[in-house]
Amino acid sequence: MTFSASLATVFVSAGSASAARGFRSLLGLPGSGGDALSWKSLYPFIHTDFEFSRLGTKKRLSEVVRLRLDEMSNTDPASVESTEREPRSFVLTFKADASENAVSLRQDTYAVEHFALGRFELFISECSVADGMHLYSAVINRVVG
Image: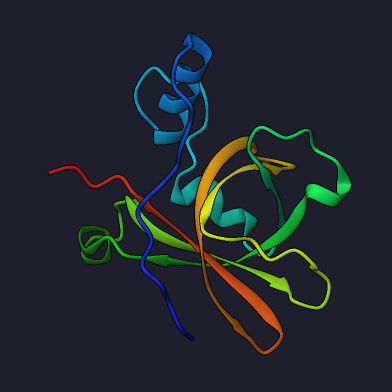
């Protein structure tokens, strides 16, 4: 599998109080008032579909691309050493059948919707096309210092 490096990104537009609350929530910061998109919140939804659409467009069926969260890889050395610590950096790998998706997503930030996790924005990179599947990755990195 070919893997391209992508910058860590859970991305929320700033500029309003609700955007700031959303940003805090996505990063799992104190006072967020919501569930974070963390290892623990995402892990139960491996093998479920996420709907990706371009930012700033109205969601019409032709503009939505469904990607399946196929794998999560822990890249946080501190959590590997301690099983009690939740990973703060990890890679999400999404898959889509190349024959079913006429649209191939390019590296960019997308509006994402999930039946249980709600709406958020996520930066993804296309990794490769292998065995008739488009592979995409998103790197989440909350390691500070």
